Length: 243
Image (cartoon, rainbow, N blue to C red; front, side, top):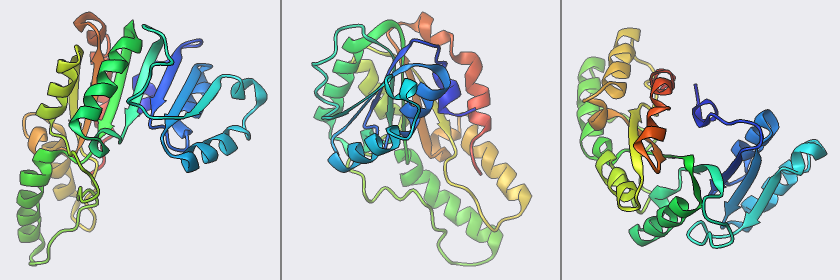
């Protein structure tokens, strides 16, 4: 199960992808579930590519896709309680706190009472500070060498790396109820199967995943009752983690 299945989309729903990039996710949603899909990105180059990709789709799908050059902190063009789903992938780590606060405040306003907001970010600040160094030490001992293990998620290009605690705090301050999910994003290579198995368990099962899980997903809603309807999907979502 991936983010598409986690979104639980139905025909006619309205979805917006904040920081949509080339728009692959929102186009897939429009194609598979006949949603009305909006995408916003501040990059003119990204929106240009998205529009070129959209032009390759059937006209019936194109009519349900709306791509805009814009800033996800400025959502005043949308009415209150307008969207069923808000998607925000790999953006929060590139924003400062004041920008995050604006995005979440506006998102709370435009999300329907029964809607869901899904965001993803990596790396996990706890893993970057503590989990990765501990993991490097253990894996180097198991491997029998002194070379530093290279991880894909280093965080050098990010200005605001989140921890489970910090991202939950941001959403709570905006009024959301949240479910925070930690799972593995970085894959072990060139290690025995038993090492990979242990690594998968440690990075995907609480409480150690808060320290070693490198991908943070947040499912947020305006009420706890709506959020509870997603609980049965979470185990399947975590089971697809790499490592």
